[in-house]
Length: 375
Image 1 (cartoon, rainbow, N blue to C red):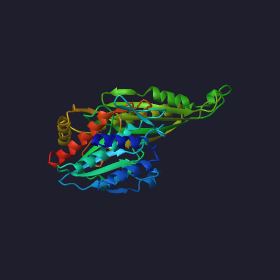
Image 2: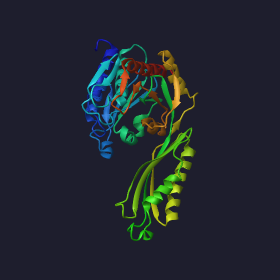
Image 3: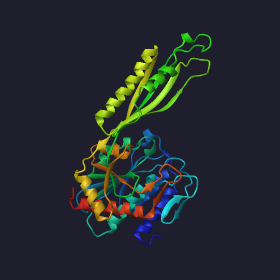
Image 4: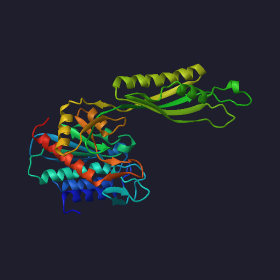
């Protein structure tokens, strides 16, 4: 299988998906990647993010000095969603699947494999290449936790490719939302529901009125809102004194998301005050959004690299977040790339072998264009 670069790439990917790496247990996967990159002359180290994240390893950062100006950053994440232990990959008709009741782990081991192989091919080729930083993060799947602990100096680059979007290679994510979450605790007053209901203040009624006043789902073309969980009450014959509610709002428009957050917050406070109860609300900005112009130089560079590799270049926005949000917020010119994976986060996850190769060739082509000053 390793007689060709594509065979070597596939073997790397299969090795990676066989390594268990749920969030918080990424060390074995990280060590495999570190060894592969060190073998190509990269300087490799692990940051101290584990002290905050609780993972059994820090984020992996590797640096390959280039033969030309420019720095390309390749980002992927080490962890996979559950069930991801004991993955047994099988290949049918040129497509890699999991053979059991697990995910495959293409999200995001396709990104890891492509980044490693990109470094190999740049060093083996006879063309100039820029310096390359590989940043492989922990706990991406549980809130971009590892990326949020990256030191800005480890991310200095002219262009970052985050290898972590679904769809056929050629897709270029140029916009992603700002994302807020909330935890709200409605406080009422308990009373016997059959004997003295008038003495009670129902936290359930407060939460219900608050939620019914919110606009949820697809709010507009750029924005969404949702209430995800409602927990509370103790028994059918007790007026509920406490209810906990969680939810979120997202928008590609930074001003619109603030309006949504304020509107949801007002609905909750108004409902609590109307009932004579109280509500304690905690909001958290999970990540900031980013948006690039279709004409941005880095977008044009990636688009031209797609053309070079015979890929249909297409730009799009996403309603989800990735490490691209965190890296872009630190001032690094960043796009996320479609990697060919489909059915992510499910046991029917798969990736075509040809798409794995196409993604890797695209990364190499971007690097070579960067080396000749295409940005």
